[in-house]
Image 1 (cartoon, one colour):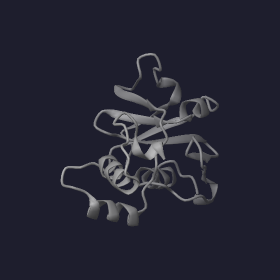
Image 2 (tube, one colour; image 1 turned 45 degrees about the vertical axis):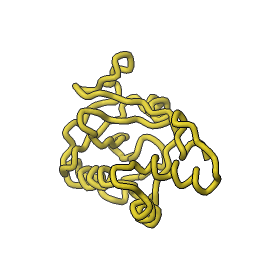
Image 3 (cartoon, rainbow, N blue to C red; image 1 turned 30 degrees about the vertical axis):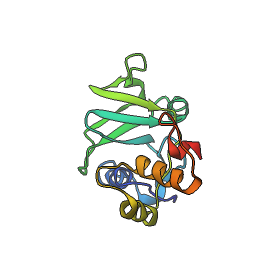
Image 4 (spheres, rainbow, N blue to C red; image 1 turned 120 degrees about the horizontal axis):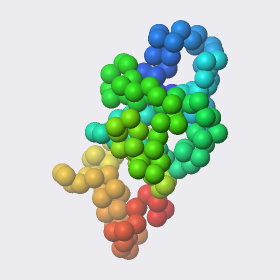
Length: 155
C-alpha cells in the first residue's frame, strides 16, 4: 500500500475498515485522485478548513473519471461529517453539501519536519512560511521577489 499522506486519510482508511467492513488488503491507496479504491467503490478524502474544502491541481478532472466516487469530509474527528457523491459538487457555484469549494491551481510544496523546524527557527513572530521563505531567498540571492509571486512557485 502507498503511504498515507495526512491525518484525514488515516482516519478515512480506518473508517473504511471499521464502518464499511473492507479488509486492509482490499484498500488500494493511489497517488492521484481518488485517494482510495475499494471493492465497493472509490473514495476521495478532504479535510475541512472552516467551511471550505480544497481541490488541488487536476483533482476535479481526475475525479470526474469516477462518476460514483464518494467524497469523505473530515473535521478532525474519526467519522466523516459528509460522505456524499462527487456529483453533489456544484461546480458553477462552488458548493458541496453546504460547504464552500475552492479549486486551487497552484502547485504546493510539502515541507519535511526538518524544514518546518528550520523555518520556525528562522521565522519572525507573526510571519508565515511563505514570508519567511521569501525573506530568506531575497537575503541569499540579494534580489527582490515580487509580492504577487509565491516564493515556492517562483523556484
